[in-house]
Amino acid sequence: MKKLSLLIMALFFTLTLSVLLVPATYADNSETVSVQVIRGEGETTTVTYGGELGSSTAIDLDALVADGYEFLFYIHNGSIVNDKENEFVVSKSNKIIAVLEKADEPVTVYIDSNGDLLGYDFGENPEEPVNKPAKPGLVFHSFAEHKDSPKVLVAQYDRENKEDVIEITVIGGTISPEAPLYNDLVELTPTNPEQFSYWADEDGQVVSTNPNYVISALKPVTLEAVYDEDFVAKPSVYLFNVSGIFEGKQSFLGHVNLVDGYELVEYGLLVSTDVKVLTFENATKLVSSAMSPAHEFLRSLNEGTYKSFRGYAIFKGTDGLVTVYSENNFVKNSALAYHFDFNVSEQPNNYGSEDNGYVSSYSYKNLVDSSDFIISFKRVAKNKGGNFNSDALVISPRVDQGGGESYAEFDFAH
Image (tube, rainbow, N blue to C red):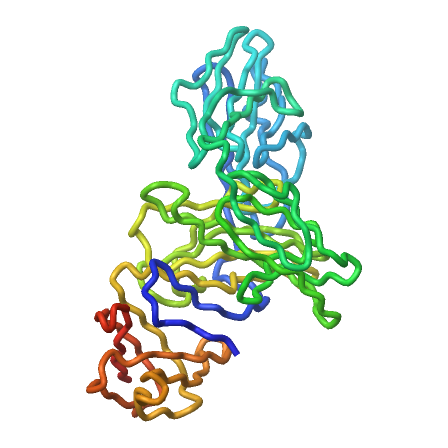
C-alpha cells in the first residue's frame, strides 16, 4: 500500500508507479543520426548514418577521407574510438564527432567533461575556445589532455564551495568518501554483498541493482540496501529531482540501471506542459546523449516550461527492444493545483469527525497501474462538508490558513 500525502503544499510532488518492461513498438522504427565531422581549418560538416533503432552500423566517411585528409578517430560520448569501421548503435543518444586531419594542419579538439564539443583549432599553437563552459556549483579552470589522445583536451573544473558537504545517508551499508562534497562520486557498499538485491530510495523504489552503485553527490538522499531472495533484477531507470543546483532551472538526474542480457539503446526525459503520468504516447521526448561513467545523465530545463517529468530508457534484449519508465513521475505544482484520477475501492461519505481531528483516510486504486493508494486529508473548518458520488476522483486544492497551519481544501467531482 502506498501513501500519497496531499496535506502540505510542495514545489514538486511525485506519482509513484510500478516499473514494467514494455515492448518498444513504433509506427516507424527507423532512425537517422547526425555525426559532426571536423575536416580541415574552417571545414566542418555533418554526415548521417541510420537504420532500425537499436541496430548497429558503420559510418561512411569515404567521400571525406580524400585530398590528403586522414581519419584520426571518433569521439563517441567523450570516449576515443580509433577504428574507422567501428559499428555504432543507431540511436540519438549517441553523440559522435569524426575527426579528420591533414599532415600540415594538426588539429586540437576541445570537449566538455560530458563529451560536448566546445571548439577546435589547427596548427602548432592552437587557441582555446573563447567561451568557457559552465556547470552548476563548479568553476572552469583549464583544459587537460584526454587519457587516450593528446589531440583532445577536456575541460576541468573546481568546486565553487569546497566545504559544501552533501548528506548521503545509507541504511545497511557504507559510503566512500564518508563526507562527500558537492559533485563527488560516492560509491555505496552493502553490509552483506552476497545477499544484496538492490538499493532502494525512501519510498522503496529500485534505484540500482549494482552492489557498488556510484552516485553523484548533488542533493541529500537516503538509500537502503534491500535483501530479497525472490527479487529478479531488470533493466530500469531512476530519476532524482535535483532542482536548485542551477538557478532558474528545473534539474533532474537520471540513473540507468544496466543488467546482464540487455544493451542500452536510448535514454532521456519525458516532459509535458500538462499534469499527468507520462508515456511515449502523451509526452514530449527529450533524448539525452551525455552519460557519465556512473551511468547518470543530467537534464536542466528553464523553470516553468513544463509541469510533468519522467525518465525513460530503451534497452535491447534477446526478444527485441523494451522501454522502461522511471517509477517516479514528478509534477510541478506551480499553480497549487493537483489532478489525479483513481478508481474508488472504498466508498467514503464525509470529511472525518471532531474525534479524529477532521482527518479522513480512504483507499483508492490507480487507473494507470492498478497500484493501491491511501489518501489522507484534513478538513479546514467544521462547517466544511462533502461527499463522493462517483467512481473517479479529481482533486483541486485551495490553500487556507487554520490554527497557524496551512491545509489543502479539496473539492471532489467526477
